[in-house]
Length: 432
Image (tube, rainbow, N blue to C red):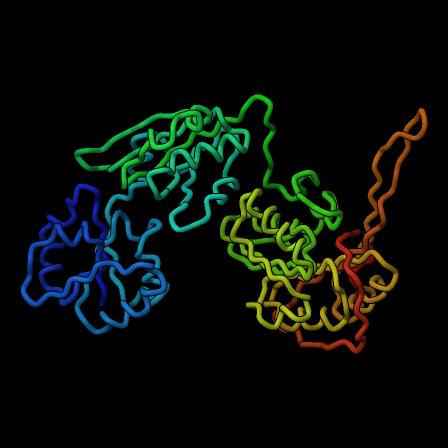
């Protein structure tokens, strides 16, 4: 059994009689040098500081302590962006006892007077900083777990870039300790200060009251971002069609999407924006487009979106089973069958077609698997001489189907492979 003990900034947990007895009885104690140095000596006890880099070395460390009375010391609450979550993933909760303390997040909310219901916690520890962009919206209250003494400057720069320079940043250091500190900043003022003049304590977090600049509108999380939000070369599922595709893909928290023939990455990006735990893998054969997808994902707050440069048919054999699949290009009967084969029960498959040949494939797929087939026609008002008129875009056929739990695997016979198309939408009902 591994006991994971949360230790507050003041180290009070290490003075608790129950914790001291637990540590004294342990054969091995693991923790940071700072925490290990606060323990009294115990003859024959092995002390192990955290290895660096941490995550790759943890499986070996778990093997080292397996079968021994072990105590792991964690800074703060072990399950708030802490080592406790990692150990649970590695060995399972049945082998672990968690001894929490009041988390830095709870202390920060107390200092700010924010309730848990009206604030959001974002962790940037060991993660990409662009993740913060997803959470920026007017009047949001964010408790941001950070790392590095330059965190306030980096956060301020990102806020200014996103049009939220009026936001306030409160840097709270050493929460709960005698030397606890607080520094209040306005995001727009921070970049103008010389580098190094704002040094955050080693143990700190940042609280942000998000306020937008007067000229800034901001982006909604509702599917169908403006086309202008995406860097693209024309291979972009357009706004109205994209919203319809996401509705049919029906993202739920923690689910995985395959975005095949990803173009500019808009489908995978908006899927990922629906919930911070959503995951997406974008498959795009063109390397320049793949690089563009990564840039779009960073700028729109989902930098963890995975991008693979390959043809869809070549890539999918190596991917984990999806909860949803979108096919926007490279369509073939074989590709549909292979996606259906690995799609999880209750998973959704959505395909867009723009050519007569690809429409024929979707008609056949609709007949074989069921689902819904619709034809979408979007028209926009444009000048027509001295007057105005409607200009139609190419109609798009969208096929969507949900895989039932008892679905049998069916392989089609056609080997026809079509070129790339990223579009959608009209209506033929489900005949099954």
